[in-house]
Structure formats: C-alpha cells, structure tokens
Image 1 (cartoon, rainbow, N blue to C red):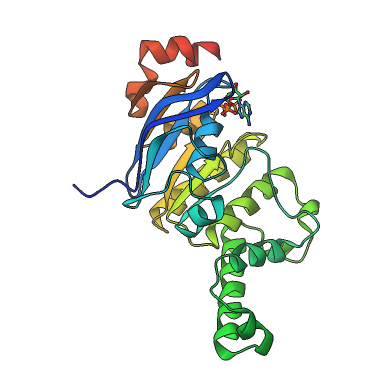
Image 2: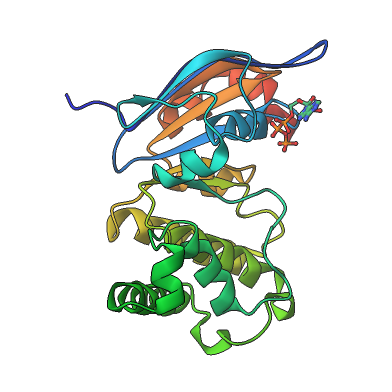
Length: 255
Ligand SMILES: Nc1ncnc2c1ncn2[C@@H]1O[C@H](COP(=O)(O)OP(=O)(O)OP(=O)(O)O)[C@@H](O)[C@H]1O
C-alpha cells in the first residue's frame, strides 16, 4: 500500500501545566476526507496548530509526504503543500477579494526582486498565472462577481468560501479546515459540503476537517478520529464512530 499523505504519531502539546494534546495519532491517505471531532476544548485546534507549524509540539512525529515536519515554521509547512483555514476567519479585510488571492500566491511564487523590478517575461507570466488562478477559484466558490469588492463587504458564509479559495490558489495537496461550517446556515452548509466534495473528487485534494456539525461530518468523512481531553478516544468509519459507546458518552451524548 502507498504511504499515507500525513502520518502523525504520539503528538503532545503542553502549555505550562496543561497537557492540551496527549499522544494523538492520525493518518490521512491521499484523496481521503478525514475529520477530527471531540468536545469543546478537546485539543483539536491545538493539533492543527502543531501540524501547520503555529506551535512547536512538545513531543511527537509528523510525517507529511514522506518528510518529517514537526517543528518547522508555518510558512515552510505551507510551501510543502499543507494549508489551512482558521476557526475565526482571517482575511485581509481592507483588500479586495482578488487582492487577497494574489497576496496568498506571492508567498509561493518563486520570483526574485530583480525579476519583479525589471518585469521580466518570466515574472509577467507568473503574474498572469496568479491572476488566472485567482479568477478560477473565485468562480469555483461563487464569488467572481464580487472580485473587486473589499473582503469586509462579504457576508460571513462568503468570507468562509473566500478563505477556502485563498488556500486553493496556493495549489495545496492537503487542505485543513477548522470548523468551516461554524456560523453557516443549513443552505450554506450544504453548499460547503458540495464544495469540499468537489475539491476532493474533481481537484484531487485531500482534506482534514475539524467540525462540530455532526450531520456534515458523518455524511462527508471517509474516516473520523475522536479526541477527548487531549487524548485519542476512538477512530473509524462514520458508522463505527457513531456506534461507539465511548464516543456517545463523551461527545455525541452531549448534544
Ligand atoms: N496558546 C494556548 N495557551 C494555553 N492554553 C491553550 C492554548 N491553546 C489552547 N489551549 C488550551 O488547550 C485546550 C485545547 O484547546 P483547543 O482550542 O485545541 O480545543 P478544541 O478541541 O479545538 O476546542 P473547540 O472545539 O472549542 O474549538 C483548551 O483547554 C485550551 O484552553
């Protein structure tokens, strides 16, 4: 069998006296949609922060596409093809939608200062490609008509979609979404589900999701990992997780 895209073992993160993540393991295979669930404060976002270089884990091993990445800074992790959205939308609110997507790509384009100053053909070409990619993803998330509006003018659900487009213009292989359905109404959540499925089925993106919306999680995930109070609690298919008594007690029983 081919190697998993992401393999996390014995991941721990300590904040002073609090062990927020305690021995979590995780495996994500190419083309899968994997969800991480657990009650509030279980440590899900902390796991994301460790994976994407926002935190340096206290212990553990993170192998992404065959390479150990634990402790690497966030920009290096992103360049390797692992990108994320945030629980609380983080956009450049005063910039237009298009500008948000162009800025995201500048971090990834390999253009030198001199090439930029002299606007060499190579530089112009990569600028053009960045523009085309931005337009393409704005269309995919149904925001092309608003390309020149400031991001601050968007409704909340639209901001969430722009965040996903901002990830996609960087051409990631693993997209990590932190509670993408939070604050969305049922119709927007259905649209989000269709978008995530399209990313996987049409664009070959692998997805790691943190989500509290159980209907969404159960209907879209290939595999679910449950953590509780920082520790691994259960994992398996949606059916296995749904019927696991420990999960019902710790998490689903709460809702
Ligand atoms: N930077 C930090 N410093 C100290 N404690 C933190 C820090 N970040 C998270 N924690 C603590 O770690 C624990 C896990 O938090 P985390 O945000 O990862 O949980 P979560 O599962 O994502 O929760 P939610 O579903 O509510 O978003 C919590 O007790 C939280 O207060």
